[in-house]
Length: 272
Ligand SMILES: [Fe+2]
Ligand SMILES: [Fe+2]
Image 1 (cartoon, rainbow, N blue to C red):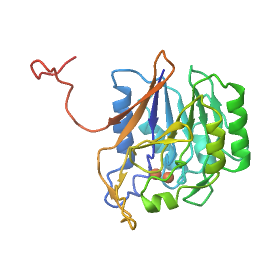
Image 2: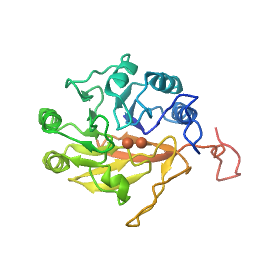
Image 3: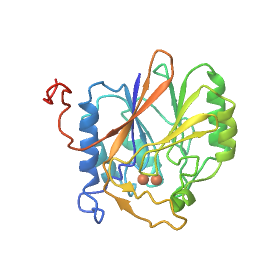
Image 4: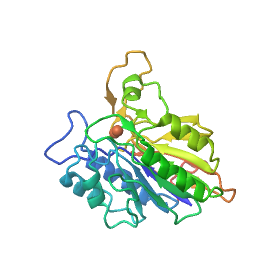
């Protein structure tokens, strides 16, 4: 099983560009083309939030156009820039439905690895939370199949990354109880997140927690106590989480850009 993870597209309307950032829908289109043209086809793509920038239906329509090259199921969950209702409407053709009214949370059981999508958003706020209702749902799902390797997907990472202002806008409630739930369920192979717009990994609550880069702009890596709030046009990318016969996940970072073809070590010429 190969799980692609794409994050933080921040798609806007064509007439509403970000200052200093190339069109985010075009960036998403390049990521989708790279994934669709990859050497190994992904079975499913998990979209870990900030799918659009202002929560507008027109932005979701542009986003789906950019994702047109992808033929695998698309599992979407909201980030702080999304609108739950517009997101659900934009993905109504996909084979999942939210399982808690008022949130976008659901389990997907179609592969040897289970995927549990969580909603960490607070409408109108940048920071995130997991309330008892959402965490009760997670605990119940994990109890159902304690022997099934599981990925938990969520927008706000549950750990501090060291980028101060992003951490202040992080998961401000529920991380402690989430840690105790995950710590009691060693079948959780990965926690996969977005929000930070760069690749970050940490051992957390007995599992491995990872953040995917954005398909658009990256957050400046600034670990000083008073970081500049800034972006940088570093290579965008996505993650591939591959499950092998030993039922462990191996995660790969795939940068997106024009890096030329794969070349032979023998003569330096492009290979098939
Ligand atoms: Fe974002
Ligand atoms: Fe975010």
